[in-house]
Amino acid sequence: MSAAALIEAARALDALGVMPSKSGNLSLRTPRGCLITPAGLPYAETTEADLVEIGPGGEVLAGHRRPSSEWRLHTAVYAARPEAGAVVHTHSPCATALSCARQGIPPFHYMIALGGGADIRCAAYATFGTAALAEACVAALEGRKAALLANHGVVAFGGTLAGARTLALEVENLARQYLALRGAGLAPVLLTEAELAEVLAQFGGYGRLG
Image 1 (cartoon, one colour):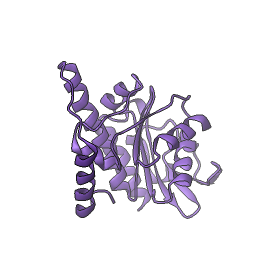
Image 2 (image 1 turned 120 degrees about the vertical axis):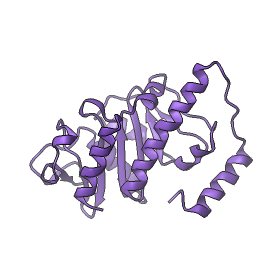
Image 3 (image 1 turned 180 degrees about the horizontal axis):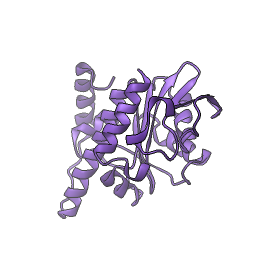
Image 4 (image 1 turned 60 degrees about the vertical axis):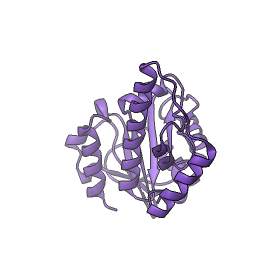
């Protein structure tokens, strides 16, 4: 994984409209901590030289800019989940709208299993950029690879940047479908535990949960 890949992913997500007004942030695990996008810089203008490497406590190890205000969230995920190689945080519209109701996404569609379990939880609310938000996020990610942040957005991680990016986009897709279903006045028929277990087994066989 490289700095160039991180820039490419940030610009691609921005172009898809899931990082409005310079919101959201991405990072890659490094041997010393993580490489993270900088604070307050439009992604179209961000270069590899603008990325910031930080240590576990947020100390700047390389780079001339301030790291994203959500650096605590990223470092907390890496500390709690050793399998995480990359973290993607978006403010994608539909998932963020659902987070503002402080509701997660139930197992109405089998693709929910990409998140590692039976649902996509919504973390307890905390102010952006705080240790409290990082703690709430890690709690919501217990046994999962993605979560909503109340009144805020989405966090997804993966062993690779491509995996984290794909999952963040799938959470938005699921949120869009779920809101459309509810907006039509229809009650979702949720998958059973047995049905979800079969999906998880199938995904494992296909390598979809890696």
